[in-house]
Image (cartoon, rainbow, N blue to C red; front, side):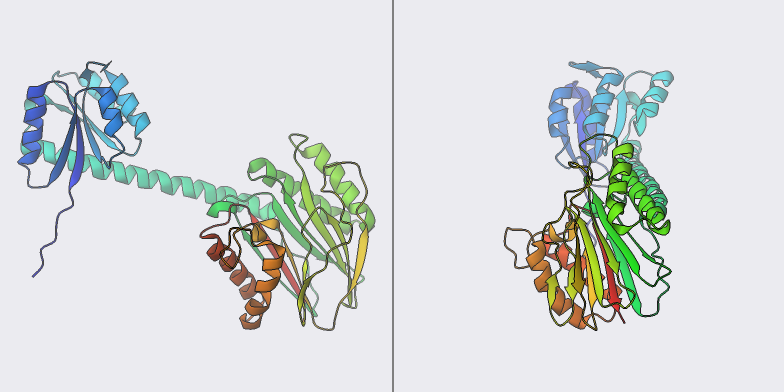
Length: 387
């Protein structure tokens, strides 16, 4: 029969009186629960020991280099995840309430300590601190999720595709594995003449400002397309929107605008500093514009020349933002995956994927696997295919 080993609670005792320090250490040593006690006689010494796995600090408020609640404040600032119990020789209820209000888990008088009281107080303080930290993390995640959901409603559009001869799938992955969305965006609209317009874009940076600009550009693009603005004029109008809305002149955005013909046998691309889409057919290749124009918000208007590409009978087009190609390379080398690595990876993934969404999931998984974790930049993927 095996006996479970109790986990040792690591305690830092900050006490300048040798007698009180010895008594407190002996009380913990007599407890049924195992404690590992480290001592410090000054606050400066205690601060050096805080990050050695300490779970609870027993803190005397009368130290040679700190007095009163100042010592508590410094301990909590240096190690916010550590439980703190204040020890004092005075019966000062106002001080006790103030210490707990500032973040201490408990307040004990030295003259009233015994083994059971001290052991129970330390263990309860550690558990309360863990519960508080878990609740705080849960609340932070809930707030981030709520913010992400609000942004998602504007940033991640539902493509307006009613056609029966095309299928599409989208994915979005926030940079670093965070919940908050960034400035990547995409959209697609099927027009009355049967043509399909697509945009994918990336506002440089990651944060609330970039997300807001991404929303503004996507909504502006949808409005311009639905209003019937000629495709060659859309980037000029989007740049005007960016110039008006961006919080500083250094902010810019890349974008790729595509028009798939009603007969699905050709696509016209306009690129503003954005990575080219991939054409997935008998082989996988990029369909880059020979002279892509500058990113939106950089330089003068114009320069976004169109390129028409003939499509085979069966094809897929993968539009993406640069987060998918900025992780480490597929062969484990130090370089980035890059467009060549993406081109090499797609055929094998496409051959075993059961549908478009699974192919995008496999691409995201591959990027994270090669990178050894979440990729730092946001990733947006839009895959459209002739049925």
